[in-house]
Image (cartoon, rainbow, N blue to C red; front, side, top):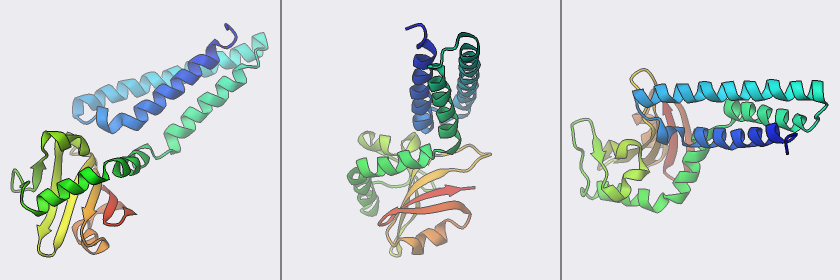
Length: 199
């Protein structure tokens, strides 16, 4: 058991890191939570570094080769954090899980049951639908005779950073192209649904 302690800690750290990265847009959505996020990431990096050093020492000094598995797990953590598209993967899964609820919101906006709270186009969702969009609001880019473009926030971003949006477009690319001239990424997820990252 003592020989496997670093392996167990590395596995737990993998689960913790994956969970934090998967839900980071849900948990860290304001300036103050951004500071908290930075602190957590620093602690995670420190933990990875400490476990890596301890694993190497145990291999070199005690010949505990089980710690090669710990190094493999820690390396996997780093690769996942750097290259796995957590936000995009979670958005695609969330669209599949809550597709009907999102279409219900789109229909309520089309029918005028939900209206913008301000001149910008922000619409506060009813309590039962607030989980569908960051901060419990959607943004109405367009809702007229030419079609609908409705944004569900994935990550609203700060004033110094862009936003990530799950966007419904009733006419597909035709309306997406005109409403998002400054988009960095536009990916079609399904019929009428797009993953959009703006500057």
